[in-house]
Amino acid sequence: MARLDLVRTLRDLGLDLATIRQIVDREISLPEVAAAHAEALAVPIRTLRLRRAVLTAVARRGSTPEEMDLMHKPAELSGEERRRLIGDFLDDAFGGLDLEGFKSSMTPELPDDPDPEQIEAWVELAELSQDPDFRTGVRRLAGQHEAGGWGRSLRGCL
Image (tube, rainbow, N blue to C red):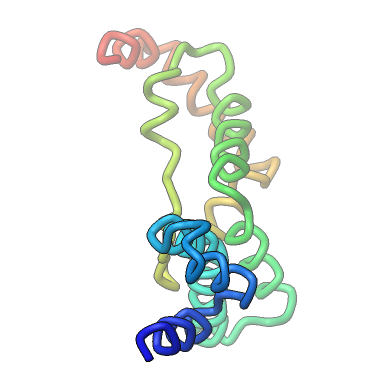
């Protein structure tokens, strides 16, 4: 009866029969399989959380299909892709200034379970970072501040 309960529980948790047979026959351990399946679930759970946050933000804003597409794209980027997007902007805007330590503090992380406001903020940041006029304005501002000593004082803080 205990074996049948174990099989039923494992099937309810989504394990296939071949894997269950290996567990029952003690060819592989239950903790090993449980850890592997829990890790495999992390990716779709993160994806569903992001989708929920995007859809909630779209519903709150009354977004158009174009805005929804804009919201979806940054949310679906990997953490590395988002860091690269912001890093490229910072390199362009602050090129020539030695701000390596400062740059990392200026690169926000989107949490695994973002709320709709965080998605909206990321979309706005992604849009701004791609806007040529905004890039030019930030670059000009950074140049003005460096000419006035801001760059030297900022480097002294790093």
